[in-house]
Amino acid sequence: MAEFTLDDLRRILRAGAGVDEQTDLDGEHFADTAFADLGYDSLALLELVNRVEREYGIGIPDGDLAHTQSPREVLAYVHAKLREARV
Amino acid sequence: MSASGIRPGRRGRSVVTGIGVVAPTGIGAARHWESVLAGKSGIGRITRFDPTGYPVRVAGEVPGFRAGEQVPGRLVPQTDRFTHFALAAAEDALTDAAADPATLPEYEMAVVTASSSGGTEFGQHEMENLYQQGSSWVGAYQSIAWFYAATTGQVSIRHGMRGPCGVICGEQAGGLDALGQSRRLLDTGSRLVLSGGTDASLCPYGVVAQLSTGHLSAEDDPARAYLPFDAAASGFVPGEGGAILVVENAESARARGVPSYGELLGYAAGFDPTTDGTAARHTVLVSVIRRTLADAGLTPDAVDMVFADASGVPAEDLAEARAITEVFGPGGVPVTAPKTLTGRLYAGGAALDVATALLALSAGVIPHTAGLGRPAPGCEIDLVLDRPRQTDPRTALVLARGHGGFTSALLVGAGDRDALKR
Image 1 (cartoon, one colour):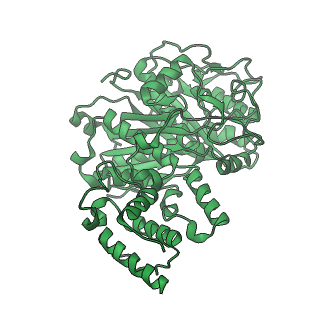
Image 2 (cartoon, chains in turn cyan, purple; image 1 turned 180 degrees about the vertical axis):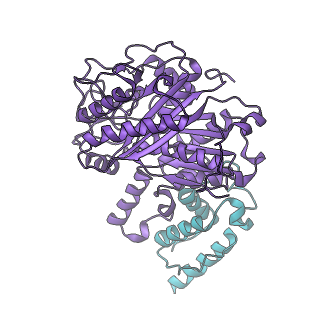
Image 3 (cartoon, rainbow over the protein chains, first blue to last red; image 1 turned 30 degrees about the vertical axis):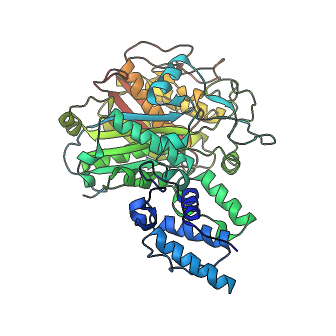
């Protein structure tokens, strides 16, 4: 069954929204850093949602992730969705 | 401050203090100017896609532009190539002008660019996703990468320039209109405007759209494809790139202690409503030239060189030559078209012409038009051929005609900055 890790999240962010030179996605605090502080706005999150939906075959209703603050929150949400899909 | 009202009384003076260029003649104003002086063409067989089977196989492509090196990493996948060009050129122009937006009042800096093709290549890719895979495969950034104002928006955000921003769509004439608008903004509360334009539509979708004008040359030899005012003229060659300029009011530039390439002395715009375009283009252009001179408070003898629109379509070349002759007399003013080295750059074309004109004024030369052979019959203009003329010109009139009828002119005067030295 599909796994979704922080590395997957980094990969998808990089591919979908790029990353600025001064931002370090591989830093140890990545998981708990606010998306805004990583340089990602609502469009970046929308792009992230679209790509995760396609790649992992899950549906993420509009607005569910609109107010997510950090990568860790996205991770938790996607894990929950993947568990639902397995059941 | 209103962007639409003009303060009564004398208009302030607007000067250009920085130039950034991304063009088939090179990346950077210095490289572009070197190519112009040398008559070194940037036109060649299209490499951005395989043009086999297309009626047009040559274009002016920007050599060696690596977005990853020129544009902030986050903006590379979020924007189209035309915006990549503009971001790079805008940063260059600001550096050239020694202008740090962080030190200037944010609501007194504006961005007005010209746009013509918009984010064509980005849009083509997303349309392919839509048709081939479905709507959920269309990227979120399509919403802001394709539309005409993408560059203005991204430049404004990146540099914190929150004054009255906008975009003008006048095809090849838009760049002059953007500079005309910059003057208005500098008169109504803005102290610095980033202006100009870039274009990048050398992709299958972009080229096919351009083919619909019927004006692209089908000539395969890059040296023969774009010969404006020549007896062998067969249309024009498309190109990508353009220029971004920093425009300020003269007092603001003086207060910052920076020299200027030149001043925007006069500007006018008109529109040819006819579908044929040839007869009316001549009379509308005559009117626009005269109004530009009147706006500058000058007479034709004050113009030292004309940068022609140089359509390459024989009937349009003739209309332009007749218009110039009517205002200046036969052979009455040196006329040149360095754009034979780049092709016509749509939203970037007029901006690049103005940049070249300003560089020419700073260098004291009239650049030549490379590659021409026999003049077309009826074109009684003094074309500068073979090599630049060292005549120390003090003014330059730039003409631009956009597909559909846009007709604009801008007169620039020499500033106090030597060539590319500071």
